[in-house]
Image 1 (cartoon, rainbow, N blue to C red):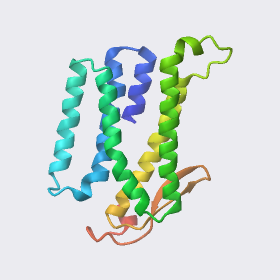
Image 2 (cartoon, helix red, strand yellow; image 1 turned 45 degrees about the vertical axis):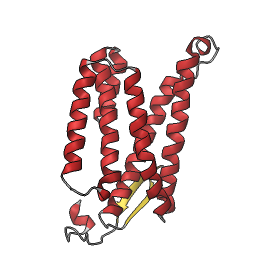
Image 3 (spheres, rainbow, N blue to C red; image 1 turned 30 degrees about the vertical axis):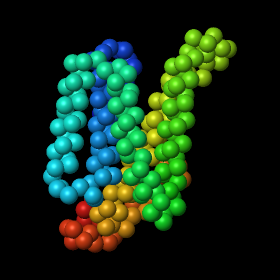
Image 4 (cartoon, rainbow, N blue to C red; image 1 turned 90 degrees about the vertical axis):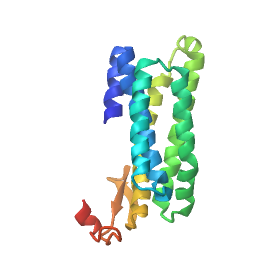
Length: 197
């Protein structure tokens, strides 16, 4: 929600401060993904969330004081690439076909959205003279919205597996996939998935 609100504020005003409200939550989202993907292998349970919290806060401060233009883009790409090997690991180890479909949709939307953004960025003067402007930047936002949804749903599935919950992905009203946990007991807390909410 913070990312969506920040993006709306930035694109409505096109001011530097609101740009921080768009870009900083993008980094926070990637740090959350890193936590979910890498937390099972972290030796000290409180160290990773503490490090990621301070990293996110430090980035927000630096990014607000120093206008990181290309630096932000490179930083974001590196964070995305750090998540890829672990997402692939979860992808190859899952038996759930609909969860695998989520991962494929995540990859398809991020690649297509990135191409739309890149073409719009590189060829904007030429494209704007066309009879029909495909609005690559707008398509980027639409596709990245779906991308975030697919990523979050796939990561909920991964997190449920980490916690020892029986989880499956299924279509919601035939369109959007959701992650559902069956009523099994969590070995860590002893509570059922239904009791945990």
